[in-house]
Image 1 (cartoon, rainbow, N blue to C red):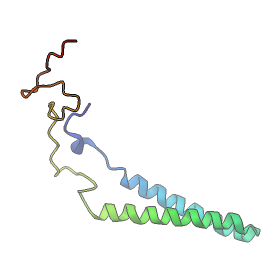
Image 2: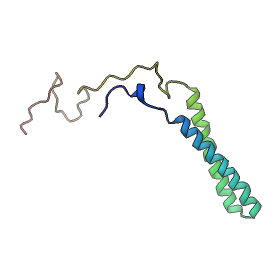
Image 3: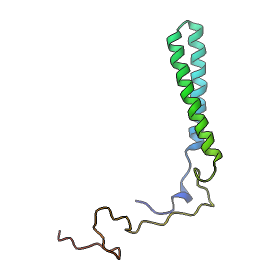
Image 4: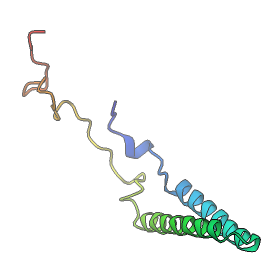
Length: 104
């Protein structure tokens, strides 16, 4: 259930995602180097491809962090108003927001 104050209490996953992408990038680079030294070019290519994916993810995360509060709502961003029945997808509420008698 939505309470309407998510931006005040939500924590952005971007910093942890940045750390995990960096950790994965370091391990993928280390794997590439290790497999090259071991004479396994197929596994080295797989680790290099994984390093490219991790580097791309890291670049996107850093871009989103630098874009500011749009992607990381802070204390200055006001909360969203609760729904209060305005999104009536199933047609069970009338204009005043009360439930209609559907005969059930």
